[in-house]
Length: 79
Image (tube, rainbow, N blue to C red):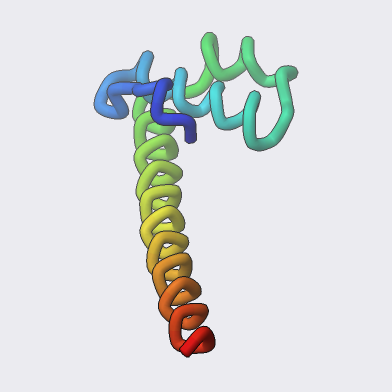
């Protein structure tokens, strides 16, 4: 998720906004916008958004570790 889009995942609007943004940017789907804003249950939107954000944070942390390992490996090969 782009960091410029910060959503308060403890609020219904924040959860819905996060889910709508994921559908738009990751899934390239715009056809669920009305459903997300009007019908998606508040607690479900918040819980799902929090789940996605945890997974995204874990993936980002793992990618940083992989990048560091790649750099270290490149440095060892260069010796």
